[in-house]
Length: 154
Image (cartoon, rainbow, N blue to C red; front, side, top):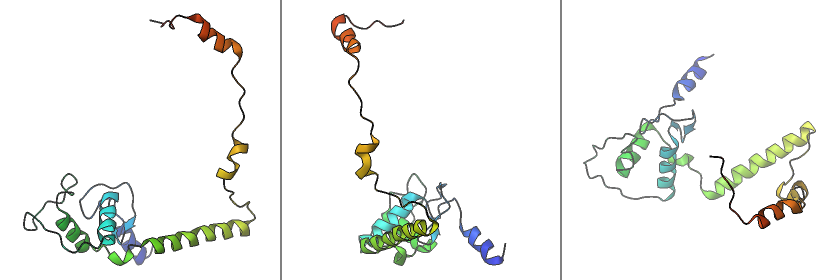
C-alpha cells in the first residue's frame, strides 16, 4: 500500500464526524464520513438554500445522536467544519444526467461482454406469473358445508 492509499483509508471511518454515531457504511458523504441521517440533513439544507438558522444555546449544543436534531444551526456548522462540500450536492438535473450515464455504461459493458441485455421485467410479468386453476371443489365444499367453526388443537 502506498502513502496515498493509507491516507485515504484513514479518512474512511465508521464514526460519523458530525454526531459521532457508529455508521453502517464506510462511504464519504460530500467529502466526510457521516451517518445517513447527517448526510440527508446536509443535502436537504443545501438544496433548500436555508439563509439563516438560530441557536437557542449560543452555539454550545451537544452534537450526539439523541440530540442532533435539536439544533439545525449547530449541526450545519459542524457539517461545514468537518469539511462537507455543498458543491458536491447534486440538483435533480445533475442526478438524472449522472444516473442516465451509469445505465448507458452498464448496457454498453454488457453488450461488449456478449451478455444478454437486461430486459424490462415489468413488461414480461404476464408471462412470468403462472396461471393458477381454481382450487378443487372438495376444498370449497369442505368449508362451506361444515357449518361449524374450526377446532383448535389445544
